[in-house]
Image (cartoon, rainbow, N blue to C red):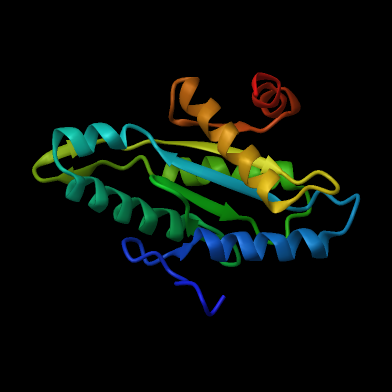
Length: 178
């Protein structure tokens, strides 16, 4: 990790490479047969509209504000990181039931982002779409990251401001199309 920049300069959060490394460690430690690893992918709904209507600087302020809200609403041991583009990633810590922990965390984080934000005198009501992926036995970090991202895209496609739990049909469709 010493070769990579560990934090995102805009948000001050860990970057995606740090999270990916920690995720790989957690999956190795979980062993086989345990579904105790959950990853959330959080996308900011309509960020491109903020960038286009106001400015990219306003979009950056929105991202930084939501990063602070997500950090405050995350569990003390969860790892919150900046993903690619307008997304955040949350690796939940020591979940007993990853699915139940993931859905509870997703709802808590979604609610934390809903307070209005003043962007250059324009009041914006942010929302987020969240994908939840639970590690199956033998899952890799890349697969879990892909599944969380696909579920986040599905949440956005279903109308935004919601969360979706990754499921087999959701992850199999892109493979069939490819």
